Structures are given as C-alpha cells and as structure tokens.
Image (cartoon, rainbow, N blue to C red; front, top):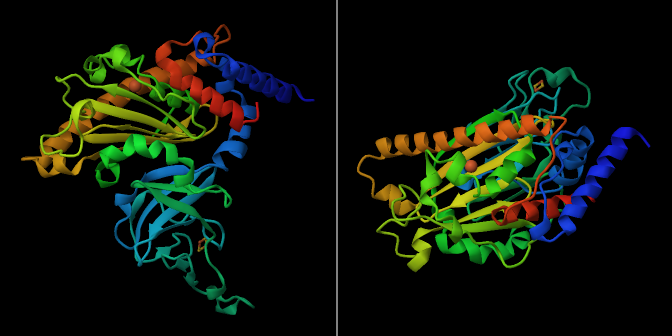
Length: 381
Ligand code: FES
Ligand SMILES: [Fe+2]
C-alpha cells in the first residue's frame, strides 16, 4: 500500500471517529483533510461527480438562449434556456477538437465555437461545420453535445454529471417546509460574482455554516445584528442538507421583512434560515433578501466561488432609487465577503502548518459536525 493511500485511509478513519462522537465531544477535522491530494481525488470521484451542483438562479435563464456556465469536476458545462421554456444542460466542449464553447453568462441564438466555428443549436444539435464537406462520412446532423441532468428547484438551477442521481426535490423534501414560507423562487437576482480564493473548499463551507464567528470576524458589518443565543438547529440530522436559523435584532439594515411582506408572520419576520445543501450550495435566506454561494474546488488549495444576491420582490418594488440601493447593498456584501476571505485564507495557511491540529467545537458549530458526518459517509470513511 502506498503511503499516500495509507495517509488518506488514516484521515478517513479519523473523520469517521469524529462523526461517531456526540456533538459535545466533537472536534474539528485534522488539518491534512484539507491539504491531502488523495482526499481531493476521492472527493472529485465520490462527491462532485455524483451530486447535484447548484450553478445559480433560474431567473438568469428566463429567455430562450439565456445561458449560465460552470465547471463541475473539470467538466465545463452550460445550462441554457430552450424555446419551450425548459432549461437543459450540456457539456460545454466542442465536438471537433475540444475547445470550450461558452464562458460566463449571457444570451445566444446559437452556440458558435470560437476556434473553427462549428455551430450548435441551443438544443445542443450540431447544425453547421465549415469546410467539412471533403471529410468522408461526416454529417453535421449526426452530432449533438452530450446532455446532462438539469433540474430547477425553488428557483435554483442544479446540474449533475451523474445520470442516475435521484431528483433534487426527493433529496430536499424535508427542507421544503423550512424554506417555503419565504417563497424564495420569487426573489429577483441583482448580482453575481465569480472569484478564486486561496483556500480549501471545505474550510469555506465550514466557515459559512457557523455563526460563531459573526460577532468577531464580521464585527464591522453583520456581526452586531445577531443575538447569538437565538441560533437554532434542526432536531435531527439530514443526509443531504443541514441548516441553522437565526434572528436579527430590530436595528439590522438587512434581514427584516419589508412592510409590504404579507406572508411572514410574528418571529418569522426577523428570522433567517441558512441552509447548506451538500456538498457546496449555501445560502442565507432572509425575509427581504437572499445571498448565496456555490463552490468548486480547484485542487486542494484553491476554490472557485460563485456569489449571488437576490431581493424579495416587494423590496425591489418599493425602492425610490434602485440603483443607489443596489450599489450600497452589493458594496455591503462585498465587505462581508472580504471579511470571510481573510479568515478562510488564513485558516488554510494554518491547516498547512506542521504544528496545527483541529480543536474542540462549540455548540454553535453543530452544522460543522453535520458536515463531517456527511463527508465521512460520502467518502466512505
Ligand atoms: S474546436 Fe470547435 S470548431 Fe474546432
Ligand atoms: Fe462569515
């Protein structure tokens, strides 16, 4: 047995022990789980090629030809809105000599390869290929981009490389009663950003999952708005997601129901739900806005981060100066992101240090324990 292999097996044993321990005795994962190449390869095989990956919001795909790209486990993909209003996903790689076709997001009438102009309909069929008339046996119309599973759930676009994965709504059924009171499918996206951060994806996921750091790392922004004792967790552990709920105090600039919100009642008007849908779709769902991220590891030490923000429709409708409001709001969340970037890049440096070790968890890090249980199961630890 190679030593790399025995090291990853030892790490999997360690995380299965943490998963099996009660929350009161749970510890953070060992540092090498974030830096070990073998663990990274296992994650790609057993998690990212097998799961639903959220790539963004469905309201970015409302017109035929609207598209959104992402890369799942080295596979460039594109989700594209069809003439019948459905959304389909395809491998975003040309059938000629494998050029990546589309990038970013936008709208197109056809997909034209930037290399030699092979041209595809938005339904993935090849409809044109210049100069191929002398190539024996070639008929453009025999070819189409490979199609992937694509589903919309509550306004989110999910794509999977696994043709046999269960439908998103089956996996998230128990989350629906928790989030449906907000009607998040109606929230209107106002910003998206893509970044690459120098950290391991699991450190960023764990950072998102705990509000223990909010009063400290975010004291200049959202940190002052949380009575931490009001943090709540699900009664039982779920296989495909976890979440916490928290309340905002009445001074919060963001996170309280708008006066014209007539669906949320009582405490729910100041309560947010913060789900993590395994492996990498996370969002803060507040009465007035939502804020999300979805991730894809780029090796052990970098992660592609896609952020987005959306507003409840009554918030947008009630704005006197939408441009100024959006500028302020996006600027505010940029600051929150910078605060998170500082800590998640810092803990990655810490995780690489030879004297580091994972310490005990607080009650507020319950979701991290849920995540360790999920990882241990998914990686076969
Ligand atoms: S690689 Fe796309 S047309 Fe040649
Ligand atoms: Fe944070």
